[in-house]
Length: 224
Ligand SMILES: Nc1nc2c(ncn2[C@@H]2O[C@H](COP(=O)(O)OP(=O)(O)OP(=O)(O)O)[C@@H](O)[C@H]2O)c(=O)[nH]1
Ligand SMILES: [Mg+2]
Image 1 (tube, protein in one colour):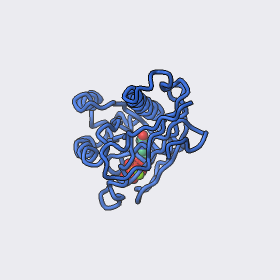
Image 2 (tube, rainbow, N blue to C red):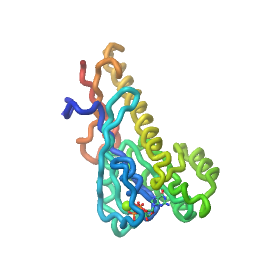
Image 3 (cartoon, helix red, strand yellow):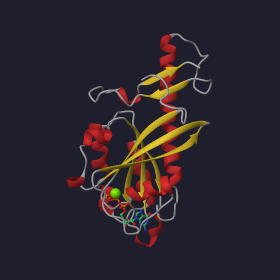
Image 4 (cartoon, rainbow, N blue to C red):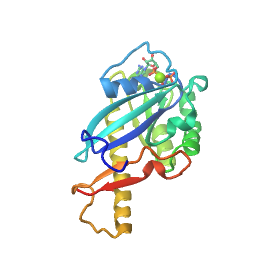
């Protein structure tokens, strides 16, 4: 359990997509993982996930991104969806103010079900539809500041800021994990010789049971 799962990546991070139905979650996912976009995509039913491996701060990160329906009746069991997630992309549609109003609802759901350390990026999607805009970019920015979230406007259609949104989340997660690893190391009294970036692999534990509050950010240090 504590060893590297394979040699293809240094870290595996689970990220969840949340937000109202129709805001573009599935297209953000397909844009990021397959560089595809579909104008007539259907509502997601149940849970899907896709992965992409990329470099963050010189480390190979495998992002495992989960996607479910915004609509309540199609949603998968909530706790299972959030289990082990270290990042979230909370999406609204800049042309539909209702989807922005519901951001608070999604934040509550995150608070109830996800790890308290989860890194959250709010994305105002469909920025290509500026002529239909119903939510000012400044309103998104202000809410993000108030709630302590990162924020970007994105367009899955134009591939605008999608890459940046995930890169930002993954980098922030990596920094959280590195800090925790450092703290764990100091607590163990093992000194600074095996800090991240110096040959140590830290694995986020995705196998611990549900009932622990801290499990998603547990780290294991594998000496070089
Ligand atoms: N113009 C524009 N349309 C988009 C964009 N992203 C998604 N769409 C469209 O919005 C509609 C809904 O997109 P989805 O990705 O299926 O939305 P979703 O959030 O996954 O919806 P649920 O699965 O029902 O929760 C589709 O018609 C997409 O083509 C975008 O950036 N710009
Ligand atoms: Mg979907």
